[in-house]
Amino acid sequence: MNQVSLIGRMTKDPNLQVTHAGVPYVKLSLAIQRRYRNAKGEFDVDFVPCTVWRKQAESTAHYCHKGALIAVIGRIQTRNYVNEDGERVFITEIIGDDVRFLKLKYDDSTEHTKPVNPSETITSS
Image 1 (cartoon, one colour):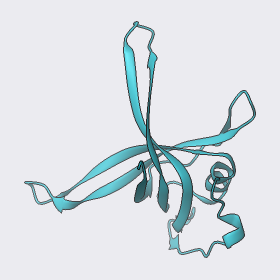
Image 2: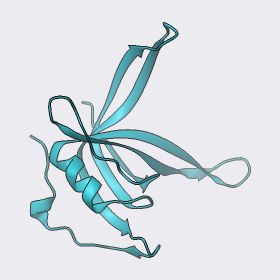
Image 3: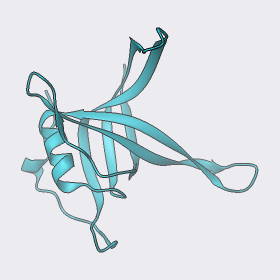
Image 4: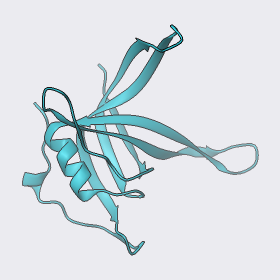
């Protein structure tokens, strides 16, 4: 089974894009604090790349901003391509099938827990 659940903060504002076929998507990075302290007594942070598609992407782009605390439920996917130097590059990312908005951060830098209408939370089939 390939299933992942992550909770973290968005590292930048989402940018809704559309494929040539007209399918909306958002690429985002989640900053996720590790559970244990390092040798310096600090928590390390992982930056995890995620891609969200279709209605989930549209909702994420509309409601979320940099700093928003979100949960992404999905799967790990790897892909590869050949770069301009002829080298094969491998990318591992999370494909988000479900995004939950936990705390949204607004322009006034205050955090708000915003209840989300269940009809706005769309799970892909």
